[in-house]
Image 1 (cartoon, rainbow over the protein chains, first blue to last red):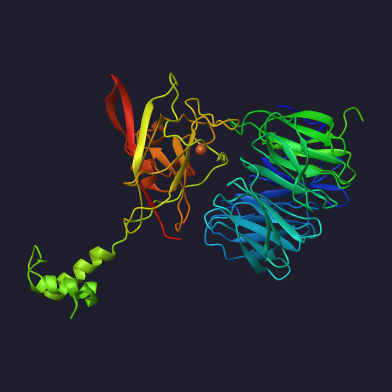
Image 2 (spheres, rainbow over the protein chains, first blue to last red):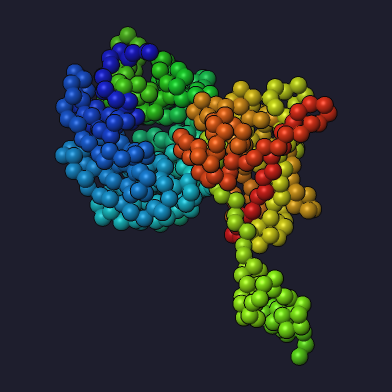
Length: 303
Length: 212
Ligand SMILES: [Fe+2]
């Protein structure tokens, strides 16, 4: 199993990772229904937040790691404050199982998808009220992403289309039907100028968010792409892979120079990469790759 | 009174009075009428949905033949009728089918074992393919379906096979094993027959769409 430049042992499979805003701590949402919070430098466990031990498979851990959401077979979405472990909200309304969940950057909104309902719900978090029910495609959302300002919500559906909604009006602003295969990962660049999408066809598409045309393509991953993360200044994009035969097959993580499209570093991963987080200083990347640990890689080798 | 002005109910009542509709067992006229109407209103159950999965690909070729010459895998014929919940033929239905190859791999670069078919004038469709392989993350053989038709709700479903070793010879008991199959009805019996001197498998899968 490939080990990172540093390894943080979790004792349970780590599914999502996120750094605190100051980079001092790293949170990991683990398969044993716990969020573990480590000192990002030493890897020492600082705190653990438990969530319901039932089968909550849909999780969201936004950048900043202040909030955490989980949805399960009861169709209720629970939102926790990770600073004190307090259960903040129980969002009810879905009548079928929810899949993908995503927080807005400021934590004021949450989007949730249900494949069976063929919609995406947009929740206002301070009030825990449902703001809009947005009609989506027939396949359920593979990924949901809010623009940095929170004015847009983008969704990639397993019907292979990308959709962009206004979070203010609920209006469907754009449906992009150009892609023949599913995009598993979506993320906006920190300046909001681009939406990056990547998935089955091993290519990273950078969409201009003004005209919704492809401005750049990054190729070279050589496998399906399961997740992505930008550095805070947008100069680095980290992408994690997935093998099309099995989630247990080895993959790789690539750190791209966003401006030139050059590969800054490529590292091995044990299995499908389920989550990536770039440290706020841009110097390292945390990788969850189906192991009971988090791999921490320097963004550039040998520095 | 012009017969065109008679309601269906009145016509059925007339039939009962004239002995054109009779009960097999002694039954009052009222009960007989109620029974008839129940039968008429009985909708056919829509085909239950299954998940779309990550490997749908747009633009599959229009062909009923997915199996290439010399392809590994048990030859399989899948056929059925497309109708709506009232039993009416559905105009303009398009059926996307896709599945893994013998080794359990989906073709994501091209269109191997991916096709689009349209039902004929009688609402029948058929595809010639192979038994899909098993893939480790979803170890029950299946064929994906995406069916759209004007005026109807798009159906996303899958066909599973009762003979699949995954169900251990007892799909009734093992249908929900591993949380893969959503509906028992999605697991279909397999019929063996001989074609061109070789054994072949056939599966019947009717598609019942709901009105939009
Ligand atoms: Fe599949």
